[in-house]
Amino acid sequence: MVPAYYLVIKMRESIIMKIHYGTALGAVALVAVHILMRLSQKYSDSLQYQNVLANYHFLPYALMLEVILVLLSVHGFNGLRVILLELKQGIVYERVINYGSIVAMIVLVAYGSRTILMAGMGIS
Amino acid sequence: MATVEISKEQKPEPAKAPVQSTPKTITLRISRFNPSENTEKKFEEFKIPVQKWTTILEAILYVKQNLDHSIAVRYSCRQASCGSCGMKINGKPRLACYTKISELESNVITIEPMNNFPILRDLAVDFKQLFSTHKKMKPFIVNEESEVQSSTKEFIQTPKDLEKFLQFSYCIKCGLCNSACPTMATDKSFVGPQGLAQAYRYTADNRDQGKKDRLKIVDQSHGIWRCHFAGSCSNVCPKGVDPAMAIQLLRGYLLGFRK
Image 1 (cartoon, chains in turn purple, yellow):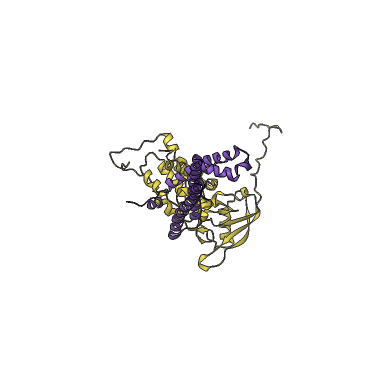
Image 2 (image 1 turned 90 degrees about the horizontal axis):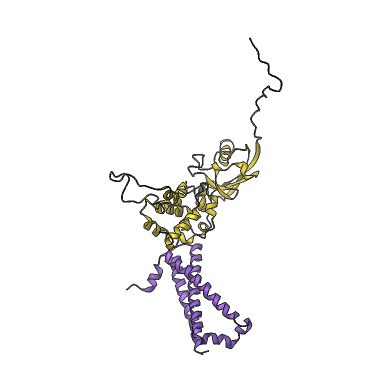
């Protein structure tokens, strides 16, 4: 069986860029919802400790935060990968950048998910 | 013998002498660099007389004939057809044979070799990468049936079919687009606007069957997706090819907007 990371590394650039554009559109839409939710009450109130925790306890909203996290991580680190590939070239360098951006993506999603899960379950 | 008298009013006026262009003197600053001597790039100044029709190439050749014969410059057709004399003139990539000094409206003209190409000497740059990328794009009609075969008479094209790629077939491979491209300045592996425009030119041709191969070639990490659509390539193209548009149209195939 072909490992999943191999598929990601060998992915054609057009597929990667479709994901890049798709994640951008998705992130814009969901971040807009996220900001509108802040504005559904007084902005300073929305950042009160209890109100923030309430967001995490509300499952649909927590799921939306998780999706935003994934979308922004994928889009952001792929953007960074593109910038770094344009700055310098070389087989080893490019391999490090490609693998590095995937690892960074996974680490950020894992860390963010941990926060969402812990806050959602009331663990501090 | 009868004579006809012409009244004073009817007398034809003597033919006017052709309008003379007053020659003026300008300063030509030419970049000098010889990689084999490991010397630093420097500018040499030459004061030369020019007419209103003098082109940059003619000015350089005047310097070569009368002031310094050692200046290296590549040129051939002198009519913007061969694509040999591309160089940076007052900071912008242009064809030397197609640029008149009078249109620059400056008494000091700075001439440098094109950016994003290795310098061979002075104004002559190495086109090896440009030509090899061009070749990689399969710049020919890929079709198993050939017009040469006796069974195939000809490939019919409507004017509409021709319109799809005609503009992009005017490329003379002068390299000005690659020189102006900001992505090429940092990404030495980037295919470049010239290669991508040619990939589109043949992909859009309805006689061609090599679309799949060409799209595979440009769909790489240093391929079509690295274009930021700055549009500098189209801005400097002397033949109106518009490589930036070709790149966007080619992306359409990869994104599934075009078939």
